[in-house]
Image 1: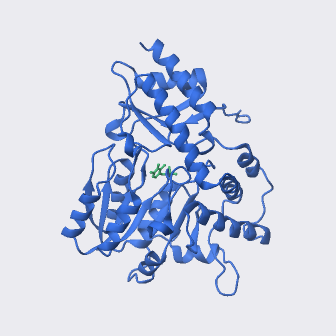
Image 2: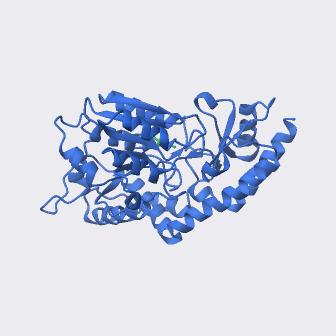
Image 3: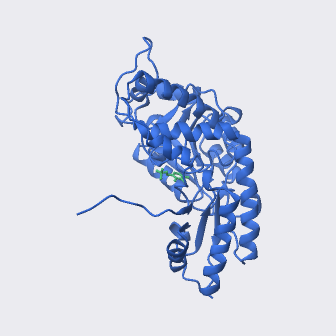
Length: 376
Ligand SMILES: *Cc1c(COP(=O)(O)O)cnc(C)c1O
């Protein structure tokens, strides 16, 4: 007969989830209340303010979708893409590929701008694609490509898209909290993130934010949003007080998970978001120097590396899966494997949120040195 499940305590240095601050874990265990309880509604209002801080925006339409980052992606595409819309997706890794899949499923006329895995999105290629496709309505790209560890320049790509009359959808799942994401300053129209990466909350929530141009496109739709659950028009009647100040039931909010997100965002605010970015940068530099001392080469060139996701090449002759298994078994340390064309060829070492601390950097380097020595 099954008994209580007691998971092992791991240090999570993969592509997410990251470790939870004890305060976030404690928030999860607080008493459940009704999702329309006035106390809960007050917490949700604070949560929206905290999310605006994380995204550096004043956008009123900023909230957490009750589902993981992939649902935030889907929320953007299902609401903002209409059948026949021309959508340019810039792909330089796994997650750009998923954007293409989303655009296609919602009937877009999709144009793909390809970049090599490990390189940032090439601004000139986007400019050329927009010149060749002047009827483009939406440009979509991933700021922090978790499959490779490359960071793309959201500010420049957004500026180019706007100059050609298109709005942008930005994937900031791994970016948010770990590296600057300046929604208002850069004029980002629609953006989604995830709770379990640099925000160090439990998985299953997707912070999103929509600016005026995105809302105008949503309001101008000729066809209904094809998803009932993700239709922003409906979700909003729950997340915002409509006219009379009364929230209406849409779905049962994940009450305790939202307490946890609230706490992780309070932690971010206490630290100061600029300090969080600086911490990720500083620990990444320490980790990168140590990895290079171990003879491991990065997938991404120095100028485009994400601090929070470090992809390194597996040395020739090393069984990468066996080594990861040893790290997990002997050290309770999780690092990530490669995805797609990088499967079997790289390790992805995450330094996200609460995990991103000096003691974990040193621990990871020491554990890697040990298992690499015996792996030859
Ligand atoms: C993790 C991730 C996602 C998907 O988030 P889930 O919470 O796993 O659904 C999307 N985009 C990027 C860049 C990611 O790293």
